[in-house]
Image 1 (tube, one colour):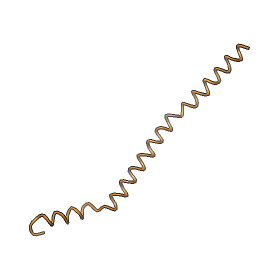
Image 2 (tube, helix red, strand yellow; image 1 turned 180 degrees about the vertical axis):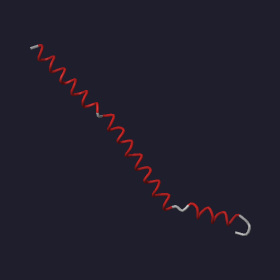
Image 3 (cartoon, one colour; image 1 turned 90 degrees about the vertical axis):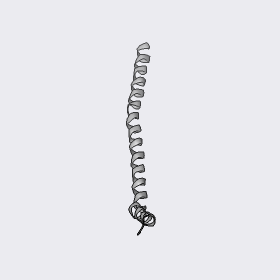
Image 4 (tube, one colour; image 1 turned 120 degrees about the vertical axis):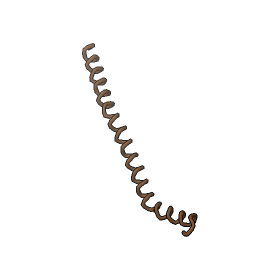
Length: 66
């Protein structure tokens, strides 16, 4: 009877270890997804915002002859 309990305990511990082994992978995957979303949002924002044209316009207002 005791051997059955020991074997059951060992199986439960192995199952818990196996379940937690993939946890790090899921965390890294979550970080990668967040970074991809942030980079995509930044690219979309900067495509809509034409910085070069705005800087040229403002510098022409300030500098003489502009």
